[in-house]
Length: 143
Image (cartoon, rainbow, N blue to C red; front, side, top):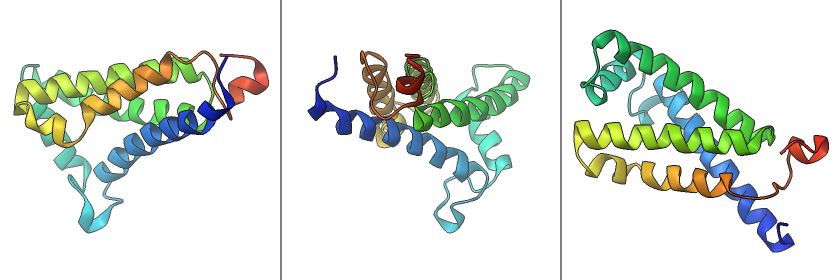
């Protein structure tokens, strides 16, 4: 059972992972303005082709769309605390795929600079929790 002192750090980890992933989605739709890395969908697709250069181009484009779908789905589930364990594992594996792809295509520095490995590790740590605080899962007894 989760100790009361662990409730807020766990909530903070859940929200930090979620907000970080949603921020990347906002960036690819230009919502960060001048602070954007990609700034628009076309630049994000170009970047995705770069980090998935080991895939055929059609799979690279599919990767951009599927990554975006899951980068919206998993964080929303984490924020709501619904299917939290599944969402945490999903986020962990998705970020692990990003980290490996970035390492293969760009070298070790890029995923380290963007803390992708840390995000993945944090998501996996979150997935191992026995109980989640401040969640819909608690209300429905659905962990």
